[in-house]
Length: 297
Image (tube, rainbow, N blue to C red; front, side, top):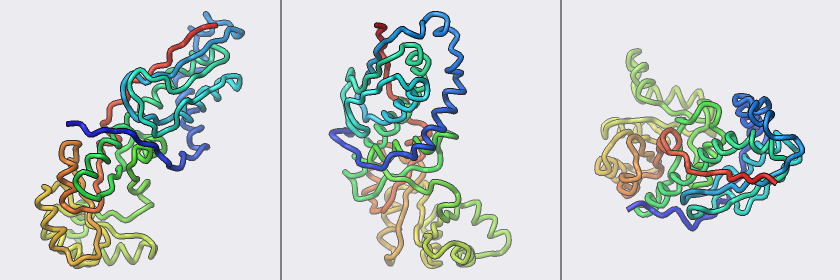
């Protein structure tokens, strides 16, 4: 049974406006929206129109302000009227916003506005399903990863928050995460887990947690004994994770990662972990079916 996604209203900070405008400008330039030969040939500048932004399938709305910025970048004369807010769940065939004014820039911006909103709403909808499923198993936070579309990380991570999830480290600078390849490289130099954790702590600011990725109970015990603040349990079964969590002396957070799906996340949450990270939220979530129904006036 697919977990419900509504009712739900997001109350999260919007993405940085300058970053949004930069993404929109890049997308419009990529599409050569200012040189739309078809529209320039067939639609006179003085012709007006109206567009209805419609969700063709159920989902969580995300990206209304981004769509607004697309149309605003093409013509200040276009008016964008949202009928809902980001985070609202709507059924299929629901009108969520209207755009009106000059028809030509509306046509030239249609694809970019839809591409961004479809992507963001798909991520928000998937995240909400994961969050609901996880809550049925335990108290774990659902977080994203850095497996985002190059150039769209700001929008995709905002969509995760709109869906009720949380963000992992945004960049490599934002947190220490000692992965298997780091450990393998250190082992080649004769360093132990204690050496690696100590070196990371000496390098990082005192406000930053040290997280270590492990793939066995033995490694988890080593990381805990070495003083790791967070232990990432990679590609383990719920039973393995539960055994590690229950055997922990306390004072350490546990993150589950690797192969997390909508079908498995409830059992993973029930293992007692604190955080569940899933790259699938951003790297393989289908875009939602959204359309802009245009009418010339």
